[in-house]
Length: 402
Image (cartoon, rainbow, N blue to C red):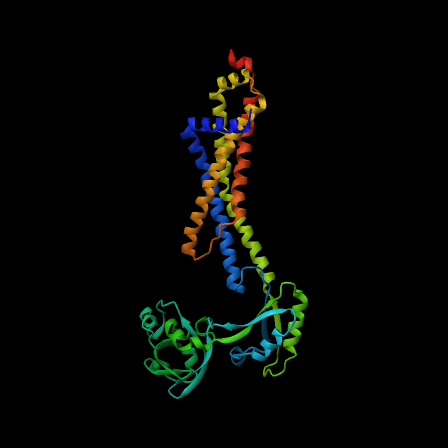
């Protein structure tokens, strides 16, 4: 029998049992949808992480140059060890394609000079995002309204102030000048007993509402290093050594230390591998539904063989060969899974895009996931239909027609 005839016969038989075919197909659709959605989201999340770290997602090799001082203190924390001279020297190297300054956004705070009633202290000043009321406080804690209104208010530590002031509690309501900008002291965190440790007081932290901090100090970001993009054909190890030697040969640093070069591609490859493994594992768990669907398909095919016993006998009597009968049932199974796979792929991409809209990820459909959906569907169709199709083909024509 011609292949086209077998396909039309398979479609006719599936249409004859439309409800059963749709219900069987539903399992394939659910399984493919979940697998494709998970793979797409995993790839989108991986690309987003790579872009966040390097600014690229095309596999470019990005090196990070940093400076490590021999001693770390308040002075070294706020110093800049890179300038235009360092940038231009690295740009002149043959293996380098481009160089950009990397900035420290001061997310962990910045050491600033604070003056209160004529006395000056240096402390790490942080932006506050958590406005939960503090315990053991003189005055009050910072509030979300302070942040919303960008109030010039400050929350300090008694441990920072007690060495300079005898009556710390009286400072509530006083004015503190931070890098030349005045703030009202609305609260002071009481010092803990000597046998307890307070993470707030370690380093003498000072807190300012985030919106206020961003308004007055967002421009105070410092150059933390260099982001160096290598040419596609560059030898990474040789380039790292050359860049390090070039930077360390430049004189002029007040603080003793050494420039270091880090290859982000190694970190990204490791991170990408971990994310791929996690995505594959979750997709495999979701793929269990495909295994269940294949059992449902096999059950349907066995039922179809039992219901169409006489039809098979008549076809054999009219000259149909065993392989024609076998191919007809195999085509039925493949058609169900292929249609279910295509629908599942479309739904999977739609689901992934809906979820990505909330997660702010970019999902890009690709040929691989489409081919994966079709390939999985065909394999399931063949595997689930093979035994029932073989049984139908090997049925004894004489026994059937008795």
